Figure 1: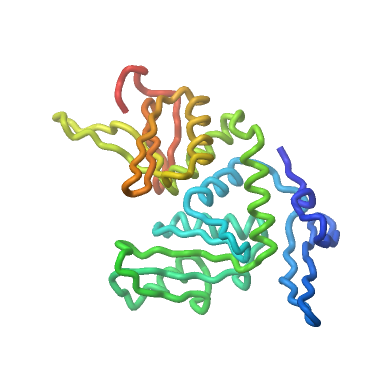
Figure 2: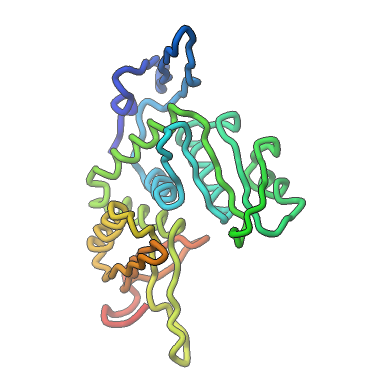
Length: 267
């Protein structure tokens, strides 16, 4: 499956042809002056593969499309996940450090916080700010893409993929589950036996994320994995608890294997 980026560009915007890429921009007139966002270059065609689906799933879990449409932002406490996303934006969309800013929230001050994140992600220290937030149990990075045009095209691309039949492809479906689990997943451990075991895996969403929950449950149904949704209005949370799969992989990714146990056993 391939998506032509020019089909996602609003009709009143301009497109310059650059061989295998396109430059997208528009002009805004405000009174007697012009306030023009910086043009953004995209590949002409986006191939919908496992890497793209994982990246979009990561973003659906821990990213946001703010109503003001000025930037895209992704937040996570895991350095590996943040590095995956930064590499994803670089490799798939050609973003550079001039396009981003980074904000770190922390509870306990570490004088080397910025230096450590900067070194790990390969982003200059000048792109970072760090602020104290008492409610943050762990250091959390917000990677912000400060490009209005990119933000709107990226959201359009995400919607285009979500409404497609991408879940019908086993490899892409599992890539979606891997990415979302890495962002929003956890494991339930049953401790009421001599040998504790994995009782379920869980996708933790907002109480109101019905569209995302529908995607997850559709994917699980296609994998023939049992699930249930547990909602709690008190903390505005929703959990999709799954049974019949196993957990493997790095930094919390989920892989639904050819089940290593019989269907009636707990995982």
